[in-house]
Each structure stands twice: as structure tokens, then as C-alpha cells.
Length: 408
Image (cartoon, rainbow, N blue to C red; front, side, top):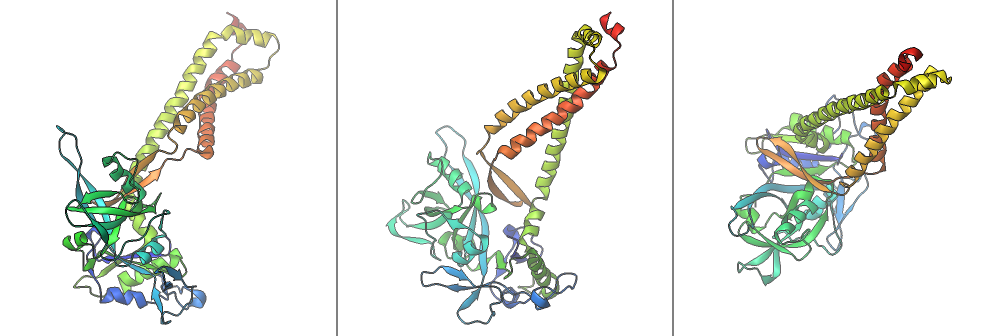
């Protein structure tokens, strides 16, 4: 979200390694008005600065966002911010008799107020779901461990991962699973496709398991939303909190990122993989060009006399050139079409990508493969370019061939 600012402890490259306490300079960020960016240029309407977005709580607990320019001291309103604790928990994976024991890591995010968090991160629940209470304790029947179930909302990727254990495509509202020596009940499924939150489990900050992990009275991240939702304002606020204010937080300074910059930093490792993939694609494309070239040379060599006959019948050199170019483009188009059809079967497949945060941290994002008309059209165009380049040299050689030489 361009208007979001992620505030962590100084030196943190990932939420997992941040450790903050409520109060001090962290709370001061809530009332901060930022007037200039990192280069000293004024921001906001008329250069009067930008505040945090303001919200008002409705009777049913939902939030209504107020328009930009709402005074930050207006009674009954709150700053749009979210105190969050991000942690990774180890979970045993159910195995069949005789199989080696396996474990997986699950990402957990605890909220002081999940309604603020869902609004900031633009996350909604699927129909039939509800948000959890601060202590996240389900008040109905007992769990198999004799205690009450713990409430949670899960992203689409996490629901699919945990659903495999129950033999289902993904968990549904009302399903349960075990984590942290307690049983949990899913009370909401989050619409998280294409975001890092798809692989997370959300719960309240007073959850007993979160408290046992040492995050009950602490948090890792404070997320702020700027009132104009602009990346410019978010970067200005991040610079102010990190470099200008920089106050003490238990001896540590604050480290703030505009949210797009934070994820850009996490994707540096993925960009290296992308470079390798592009390089491999280029090598394969060059191989394809040479493959077309070899096929056309073989085709022309087998039809040298036919070329001579065509020349005797009055065909011009450029017509010979065009005929072989059309043949090479046809070969490339048929091969490209078959490849695109095979690729189309991957449409709708889900995959997980890890965004590395360094120091062993990182996040997992669940995404969906999309092989649409644009992708297929681009692939076919690319194959035609390969056919054009691969067939050019053989066609030129056929065009330059003398009549007598071709008939010998």
C-alpha cells in the first residue's frame, strides 16, 4: 500500500527481528505532522504538511475512514495505525506410520486491534467469517486438549497448507488445527490473494500462545497510514521517523520504511533469481533460433533443384526469399502455439514465493499463475520473432543461389 509506513526498531531488516514496546517515541509518531521530504521540499496541500489518516469507530465496531484534512485533535477519532507482532512458529506435520517426522514454519501476526490492521492492509473476510476478539479465546465447547479453542483468521495460502493435513483443498470456517500446544478454530478466511498476508495466521495480541512467545506486551511493527495515501508522504514520514526524530526506544532508535520500499528490499534476492531466469530464457531463445535455422538449411538443401526450377519459371529472387521466410514463420508459429497450449494448462496453478529479509528472515507470498490472452499473444509474437531471425540466413542463401548451380 503506497500510503503505509512500517515502523520497526533500529537495525531491523525484517519484522521478525524487530522488538518494540508501546510508548515513548513510537506513540509520538501517531501525532506527527510531516512537512517536508528527505530533500527538504514541502509536501501536502499548500506545503502545510500531511498527517496520519483518521477514523471513527461505529457502533458495531467497524471503522469509517474520515476525509483528508480532518484535524488530528477532533474528538471521537483515532489515527489509522496498527500495532502488530509478527512471529514464526514451528508446527509438526502429520505423517503416516513409518514416515520420518517433519515440521513446518507458520507465520503468525497478532493485532492489538485487528479492525485497524485490516483497514490499513486492505484485507477483507470472505462471507461467513468474523474477526477475533483481543484475547482470541473461543467461548464455546472445549478443544481436545481440554482448553477452549483459540480464534484465528487465515490467509488463502495458509488455509491451503493446513487443509492438506485434513485431506481438504483448504480449511473452511469452523475447521480446527493444532499449533503451539493449543487447538485453534478458524473463524474467518481472508481475501489475501497476491499479498504476503496469504501465508499468515492472524490473531489477537492477548492470545495465550502469543503471550507465551513473549509478544503479549510487545510488538514488532507499527503500521501507519498517511491521510493522502501517497508514496511521497509515506517516504517523508519514514525519513522523519528514522533520521530526524530518531528518538530513543529503550536505547534503540526507530527504523521506518515506506511499505513499497520495505518489500522492494525484501525482493532483492528474488530479483537475482529473476535475472537467472531471464538469462536462461535468452539462452533457450538463441537455441530456438539456431534450431529454426538448422531446419531451414536442411529444407533448402533438399529442394535445391526446385529452387532452380522456380527461377526458370520466372520467380524472382525476392519471391524465393519470401517463400522460405513464410515457411520458417509457419514452423515457428506452430511450435509456439503448441508451447503456449501446454503453458495454458498452468493457468490457475498456485505457487509460493519467499521474499528474503536477510539474517534468515523473510516472508512467503502465495500467488496464482495467470496465462491469459495477453501472455499467449506475447509468446506467439516472440516465437514469430525467433522464426524471423532463424529463417533469415537460410532464405538469403536460397535467394542468392544461381540457376545453373541449383540444377546441377
